[in-house]
Image (cartoon, rainbow, N blue to C red; front, side):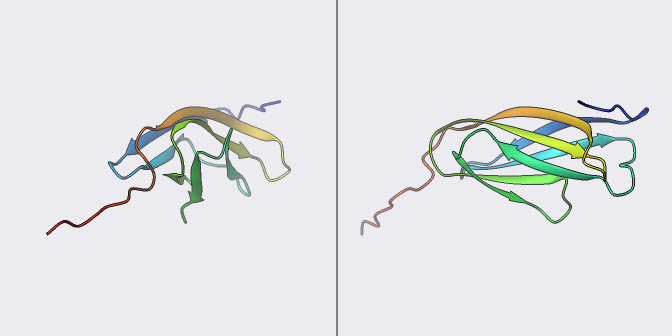
Amino acid sequence: EVIVCPGFSMSLLYEANSYGVQYVYANIDGILPEGSYIEWTADNDNFELTELDDGMTLQASAKQLGTTTVTATVYYSDGAILAQESIGINANIPPYCDMELIW
């Protein structure tokens, strides 16, 4: 159950580069209540997920081709859910490329 905090909302934005790395940003409108935190999850293991130091940004590095749904859940300090949003990201390039240097 999501307990709504008046004046608070969250949306997810993403940015991708050509190397299979994507960044998902939690765009917060309002102030996070004292002690609240964000937990990032994914519905599969197509990406290696790394939460960056700010806690509001997730780096997703492609491990294999496919689509993944990433979810950001904001919890109050007591574990109740304040907000939850999901976004689909796509690994559409090979994560590892063998390159051969030809002279």
